[in-house]
Image 1 (cartoon, helix red, strand yellow):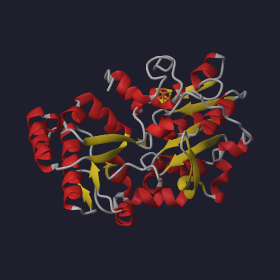
Image 2 (cartoon, rainbow, N blue to C red):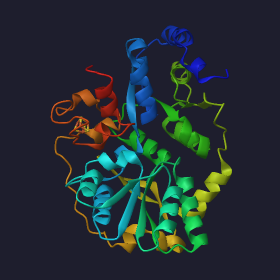
Image 3 (cartoon, helix red, strand yellow):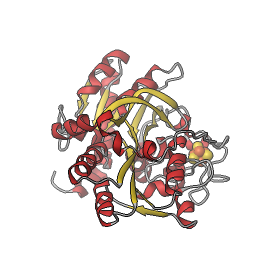
Length: 362
Ligand code: SF4
């Protein structure tokens, strides 16, 4: 198929859903890892077309949602300092911290700017040598290569006024954490196609083997997602736990090796705190010691932060597939996109935002 419209063809999707219905013989719980997939599922009503007993739960693959509250509070503290230009992806501006968000800091006079990539922030740093320019480097494996490249670029240009507030997260350790939890319900995964376009899917084979779960690399259009579900269901029904690729038009086994090389050049693995979930071992990337000069948290000394999360928010449980947004007592009442209590209600990939936007009440 050549055109995106073909991956949204309702007739083709229905054929795959019928095949799923014929294949399923018992209840299964499948997690779509990425928030982009969650939004597609809600938008096209795919979950409502599935046979009874086949349940989709929503995973932690929304970078805005899992960026720790502590890191949000650090971003607010840095952005509020004088002579700083704080740059970020747009989604992060509305994420609630303990005492406000980046929008409220901007409203009180701080220079907070939305950019599309860290390389835009480099340009701002070149144009404003009298100011310190900080980029909020959040995200999964997808954004890490460009952020690593910006560090290399800043070094090459000799920029002394550019730094990153780094909060990168990695998918495979999160899968380990979910599957290793005594409360785990997930029996199969739709892996996030865009993450795999960078990293390949070689990292998933030991996970599938260890926990005996099938993993299918899946895209984002309704036909991609239906096909991914069908492949997971077939593997579950057969009792096998392979890793398969249902997104071969984009993803290869080994992934984008120059991008992986760039990540490994600049970053090293570290334990990382995930919002609402806690610390997951080796689940993050931080700057290597030789690039510490570009670490905004060090440069601006915002190390001692004591974040305060809303006691009503159950986003951590939602991101582990243990609850659905509508099970949160604050959903659509105290917590709305206009007055969010948690990041999953404001992110364009957040599960609570998807349920709210598409009017889901069940
Ligand atoms: S509805 Fe709001 S308070 Fe409830 S889990 Fe989602 S973000 Fe948190």
